Length: 233
Length: 53
Image (cartoon, rainbow over the protein chains, first blue to last red):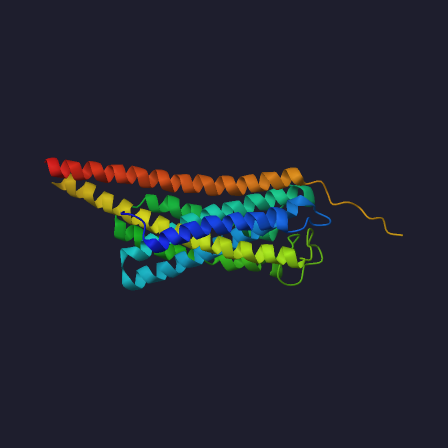
């Protein structure tokens, strides 16, 4: 893995800058919510992290299709990288949701459809990483990963739609809330600006991390091949 | 007459939430950097082994 390409360097710096601005918008610029207080500020990154998780798992599914159709290892590298990033952001989404819920719902956890489906989705993709490691042959591993990523993606729309099709305590950001939802709020213009900028920022961060992680995976496979070649004589 | 109540005092939870966000992102970035460093070292070692033998 040589020096980073110029495009990646630019994206990396853009990510850092945008994250700084997004943090300022969330922590300072956006007003304090009238009922929930400061904990509502977590919402901007909580939703953005959830968005990136879904996007990452979609990318993995598309890359899985790409691998099955074309057979090129680069598709598998993208899929694996994307799943790993998706897991990190989904973890952020779930844990920040729990922290927000403690003062608002008076509980760290409830068996709500959104919470359950999001957690199942996280565990599904964690299993993807673990199960891959159990397969030695690289082509079999890539094929398994591709099929798993495609089938596993079913959990993503289920998680997204869960608050729209089941009775839920979880608030809806876009659309009408369930009458039983707790913690819903109307966004002021400043809140909306902070929210939309956070979504954009996290998307840029995802693309940057995906590029870095895919390069890392390529390097890892290259080192493995060189090791095998050396051992083979 | 409606009573105006102040927002809930939830600053500590906000700090906790952002600590998780920054901490997780920081840990992941560190993990990427460490893995890249270790792989580069492995590659250097392989190249010197191949050159020597």
